[in-house]
Image 1 (cartoon, one colour):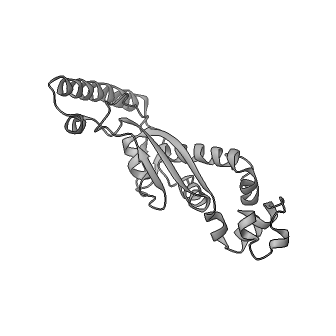
Image 2 (cartoon, rainbow, N blue to C red):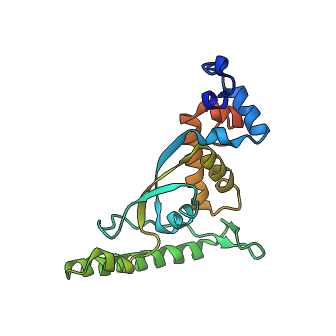
Image 3 (cartoon, rainbow, N blue to C red):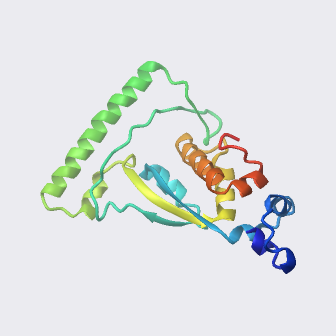
Length: 196
């Protein structure tokens, strides 16, 4: 990215010191240099969260297909209380009896869904049809690839407290990987660690 940013300064193009240059580009909105490199990350989540992730249309995706392979797992979640005034906010303060009820409901629902799915397959029903019996909590794996610019936008947007907690956890892990794999860009962004 630094090499490409210095296209108009060929005598200095090989200079390995690029953090300051990238910081200058960020400060001045010169985002095109961040489109010169890509990052691809494997994400393991649920179908409900993958549906949110794939809304980021600047990215490219390859996802586990329930049409070709049987579902391996259905994940449980810890429910949260809906914020009364903000549809995009929830609170982790439900009473223990409500948490217990939800856990039992998940167990019953997921167990029955898995049994019906397995029965459908055993009756010769195609996976592409049987998958309609599965809940959105079914586990999935996807590969998400985008330019560094796309990743900066995604991470900034989806680590915001207004993002659903499960999706925010995915984005935080993506940020950790970004910082690990692109330390110079992370330094320019002042992303000292995945917790910032």
